[in-house]
Image (cartoon, rainbow, N blue to C red; front, side, top):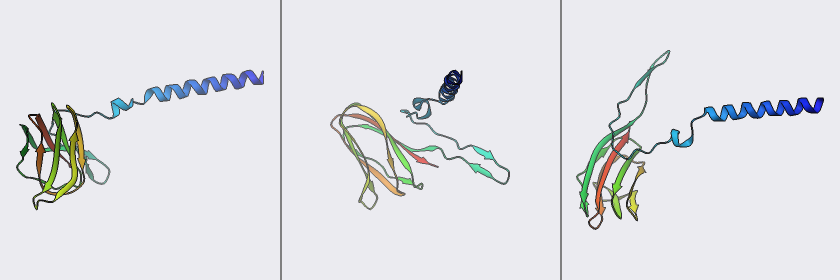
Length: 144
């Protein structure tokens, strides 16, 4: 009798655990990489004592082209920003400060695709894009 109660208890705990796990969103629902640029508008949440502005990704500049190119400069005032990129073949992109020193942020894709590269420095930058007849698009976004 006591052994049967233990088995039933363990079975109920297992069912409860499965219900809790099933109620959480999957990893693919929590994290979504967006391949098309968007402009996000911050939202405000009211708390008891003050308003809190949520940070979102804000598009600063969109560059596109074919082959190698040096872009116009763009200013980053946040400590965190990213380059969302798309390319139909190999592409290498170096980020340079306007004083011509290279940043540690770059893109180095060996095949066609799209992804994001994250950067963690403020300043005024420009991109040096290296490719051979590759059609590409790079969206610069700040986390504000």
